[in-house]
Length: 478
Image 1: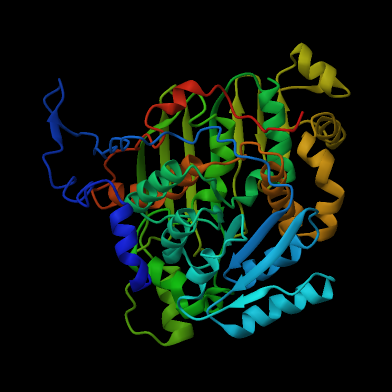
Image 2: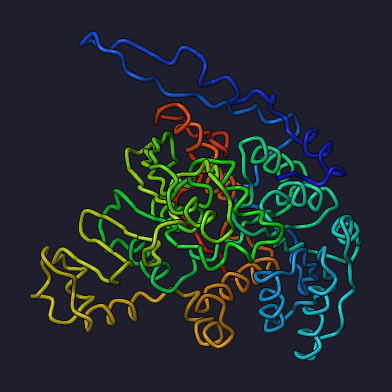
């Protein structure tokens, strides 16, 4: 994968950390002798560059309200085209500009605007069209839906042009990119949000509300995953970019759908933070078989394993388990589990709750005498729980979200909240540190895997700021 040449220098300059931040780390002496006289593996360190002078964090960033949000879209394939359609259902939004390297994709989205009774947008195409779009003076938000390799340079350039940014997942593919994007967001004091839709899914957001109201006691551990056989979709990616990335990289390169909900349950960088991880994988098998059978490739080389398993430790002693598998022939799953002292939630393959019979639980479900540790609560009790703890965001948006659609409505909820917060001058639900923490699992797991599953330090992307924020909060206008 290559970045556009015209932005490479910009990205290199934006990176305030040495290019050898993790290079050669694994080659250093990472062995130690424990008190039994046996060799053990030390933690592989990853640097946290000092915040440049005059730069401040963007935790809880509030900007002036934007009553009418003027939006430009870059990337109009499957995800981009559907995003344009969703935005036509949002009030106080003007879609001003559309950009894709393929003119026919721009025209398709233009026709969507026309069918929805919206004004035509200005059109940009070609390799440098996206830069010209970012340079416009009449845009408040750049919405990026391109291949992964172009996310970081586009986000950086857009923020340097004074724009807020929302970017598809994963927003960055390396630690260097993560720090470059963080430093740009902090320097420009602009919003930079990753478009992680799964945190807005109905079971996840309801369960998070239960957890925040103490129904599960203390949540000690969480699980998440992206398990999705991509055989029907491999040929749909422009220039085969996603297959190429799997051929060239090991690790959990698409972690955010599992990471996001799990991190929110554990208040990551809002009173706790991830400190270290260990990753293991199994040999690449199904993808090479696919390449041989469907594309006629002889002895195809695929670096990414069939599946990757990652265990994560936090500063407060809690844990996460994250899994990646886009190859095996198995049902779709994001796992999603919340494990607390007084209860448990599970989404795949069966949605359910298990609750200790505390006074709070007894008041929340019918037939509370049936609460026990051997079974999920009944479907009647589950419905009562989900009705009682329905998140305020869903109370506002559920009906329209299910009508508009987008992965069952969670895409629309995500867009609604982004625009709502911009219009009211509120902190966004997800910030640039979430973007970095959830996206860089790919780079960090690759570092662990390439060093025989050695433990790897997870950088503190907030540079200490996680200690001053107490719990995840969704903001509303007063």
